[in-house]
Image 1 (cartoon, rainbow, N blue to C red):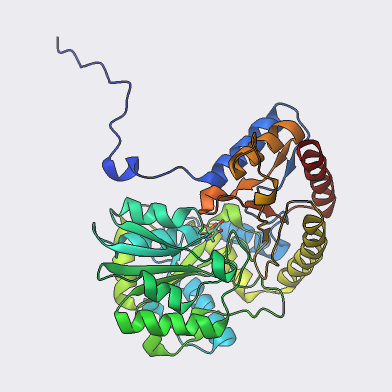
Image 2 (cartoon, helix red, strand yellow; image 1 turned 30 degrees about the vertical axis):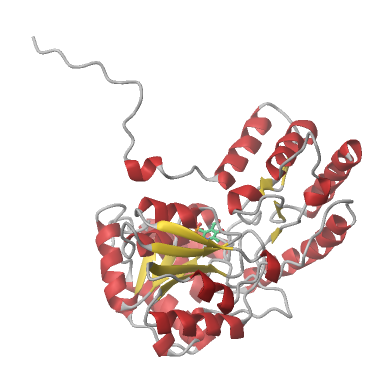
Length: 401
Ligand SMILES: Cc1ncc(COP(=O)(O)O)c(C=O)c1O
């Protein structure tokens, strides 16, 4: 009788995947979950998702889609109605006319960025990524065998400048990944600087992914700005990654989109067609309602984030050793806590770990975003939780410093 070799206990993971890091933000979520499961009363500043429920009109659209039997495969690029809704949104808000061949629906903004990165990058290429960055950006470059090249931006308060990009460009530079409003810093790239950066990348033939997942969560005087609003000649190497997750509190539905030149979309459809195919059909119909239905919920969420942000910022600035610049968008504060670090708490990772153990309070270590010495505090949680969490951080700080 044929015998089969006993399977090795160590899985022969591919080289590309072996080079990748696990997500620091997912690790913070898992730590909070484990603590909660043990019965602890956890204050969670780790969440990268709105604490609001998905608006009712969107849920109803999903129910209608199920009842109408819209439960089958769709085209890989998604349903025409969703393309239309996305195109109309960009026309209305930014006066730009995308064609249906330039849009595709994806399983969240993350898949749009992944598709865009892996269809472009070859081994040996360099992808420019400003620090601090969303944890997934370098991993996509690494997965494609390319080299992430980080741009330091601390000297300009985490706001990237065209001069910084220019200094980082080499003959191998293929791609720049921008994210404004930024996760984790909350900083917003001023439109004039955005334009300068795109003039530079266009001139040098460098492609650009603009991750605009927090597009609508901007606090005045900062301005809502999409790279889509720049002239067509600057957009010929641009892919915009958008998402319904944050704007409409739809993180679990998994809908996002890519807007890019038709040839780039065609390549992305190859990748998506052989991996996930279309994103969930019911969620696509819900997303049509999100964009075309009443928009009040977006304003309500933004007003609530605005209140929380103001309170949190004052409270953080009162903690000895904390320095916190004003987040202009998204829903994160990103304080510099280096003033708190000392012998037994050497790193922001030590700080986050001990805060979790001693005060059952979750923050995300800045090192995962390429910013050791910082922590990310999400205010996508209730005011009550924010107040309680800040008390705990104060207690922790008093005990240790
Ligand atoms: C900067 C940034 N980009 C993209 C995403 C992806 O979100 P989703 O895939 O849920 O649309 C996130 C989610 O946290 C994010 O923070």
